[in-house]
Length: 280
Picture 1 (cartoon, helix red, strand yellow):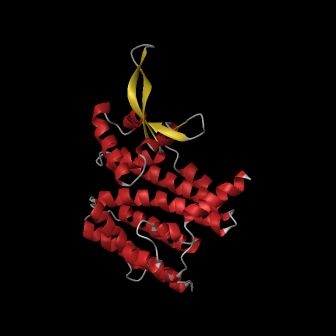
Picture 2 (spheres, helix red, strand yellow; picture 1 turned 180 degrees about the horizontal axis):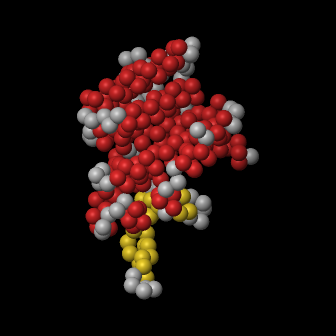
Picture 3 (cartoon, one colour; picture 1 turned 30 degrees about the horizontal axis):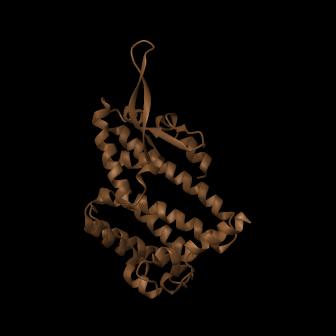
């Protein structure tokens, strides 16, 4: 299914309340979203917003990139209006909110589907952009960015499954790595790549390895959500099994196992070089 088909099939009230700022960036407002999600009073909706903010921070994102306090005009009797506190929300913020909203409401389930589909649409659009890239450096930068974003969605979905504490999430992540890397956890991969203590393994992966890990995180998030996995052990097992299946796919295609792929140059240096190139 292409982007246009996905968009046409999933037009909804969530699409209708979407707005765009002066830079063309899409956003939603908390008060409008609260009405759509059938909250009788905004104060009853704010706990879901606060839980979403907490999830955003726990995933390592900059809170201000997704939640911005604003004033919103509301209609009163006749033609009167007044300003009230609200929050300007990114697509990711809305995704987190509907994951933390009242699950007994049918419209909340619809919202979860809508924002999941919108994420998929954006992925398709970005893959079209990716296919136009030519250099290994550009592909690495693109995939590294995508993996960072996908890890946010995975962290949120894992939290809903019961993976709450940072140590639990680290264990959960290691299960995915161990499935994909034939038993190697993050620490072992770090050592195998010969990295320094403060260096991140994702920053030293080539495009092939990044793509494998992006596929792992995408499929793990999707399976946790669709199968409604609950409990840390079940989530860990699911992530491990997804990693193993991705590894099996690589083997069936005759690809190089991820632990045997070469260590690439620090992607931060690559970014600096490309920035310098485009400035000249």
